[in-house]
Length: 94
Image (cartoon, rainbow, N blue to C red; front, side):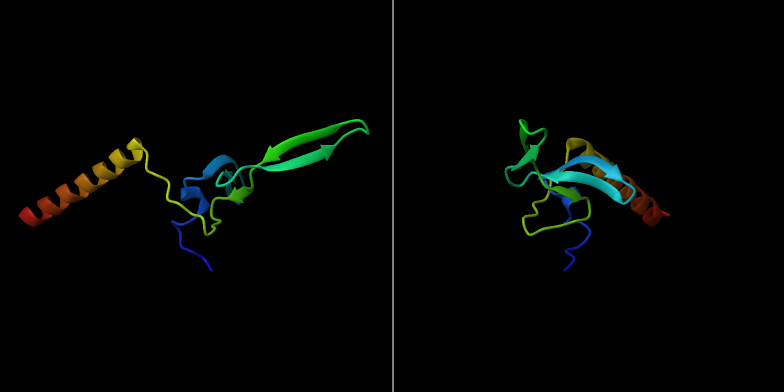
């Protein structure tokens, strides 16, 4: 079931963009703690590390929480609204 364009990882407060591919942006889901992983190198070497799940920007899950807008985004949206309102008023006056 697709949850819609807005309820996707790219817009989630837990998503951390890390790069991109030909198919779109990729990020880490930081909803939960990273999962421990182990790599075995040479016979005497074991490397332990932790990773967050890698997810694409259009993926989704049931833990989605909207990312708060940054001040820049709010100001840009307000400027667009003011411009549209001015154009509407000018059209009504003519």
